[in-house]
Length: 146
Image 1 (cartoon, helix red, strand yellow):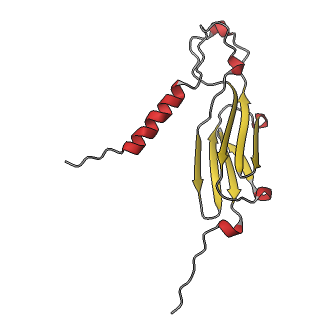
Image 2 (image 1 turned 90 degrees about the vertical axis):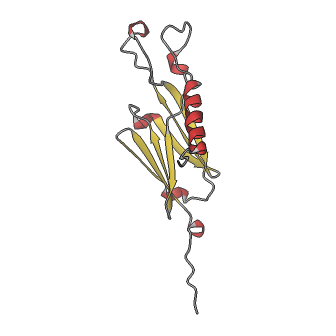
Image 3 (image 1 turned 60 degrees about the vertical axis):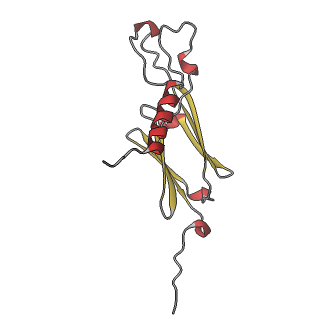
C-alpha cells in the first residue's frame, strides 16, 4: 500500500484553519465588542503567467468603491471595508459568521511590474488584479544554433 499523504498540504490546511480560528470572530453575546472594528482577511489566490502576475481576492458583498488597490516599491496593497449592516439590530442576530470591518492585505511581488498597465476588475464578488511584468523579467527562450 502506497502512502499518499501530503504533509505540506496538510500543514497549509492546518495553518488556514488556525488563521480562521484567530481571525477575530465576533458573536452578539460579546459585550462591548464593536462589529465595525473587526479586522479580517479575504481569501486570495495568486498565480503567474508568462506576462502577468494575477491576484484574485474574494470580497463578496463589498462595493468596489470601498476597495483600494495600490502598488508601492514592489508591494501590492489591497485594503477596504465591509460595513456592518445596520438595518438589523445586533440583538436580532442568532449567528454572525461573515466577517465585517476593515481589511488590509499586502504581498511582495518579487518582480518589477509595469505600474501604468495594472488593471483591476470586479465581478461576482471577486476582485481580479492583473500586474504586467516588465519586459526584462519575462522568460525568454534562447534558440541554440548548431
